[in-house]
Length: 193
Image (cartoon, rainbow, N blue to C red):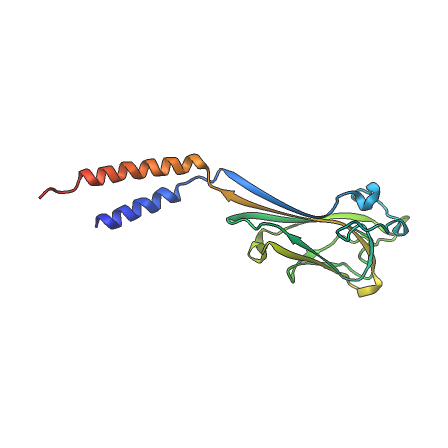
């Protein structure tokens, strides 16, 4: 009986540990420099000026599907995740789909509009919290264009943000102090022979 009561109290003590802090991991592929030209969200883009790829392969004009890989230290106790991508010009013949490790997570804003610039830059953000079970620490983000290799477009960056709950250190101290008191009380209640 005492063992079960003690186990129940122990479980209750650890369940009450607060998670007031959060640890955030950010993995960036690309460089957030507006395609090496300072282009901003919603701006028109001259595709012929985007041709200087950075060391990660972004800031370049592509044709067809492209993928990047986010390598990072995957935390435990993930509470939320998001993906932000900044692309330009994609959408010829239909919207492009975006995938996380082969699973469709959404569509990009059409960057191939008819208008004075014809190609536009758009920043899209996707809530990945429903997909945290897919995260591995080496995650592939793929953009699949609607028309395959005939769709020219540019990719400035891909930013994956993962937030994990971190137990508050003072809560552990309080939990252990409570356990010590419970242990002392249980010891005092032992019947003597």
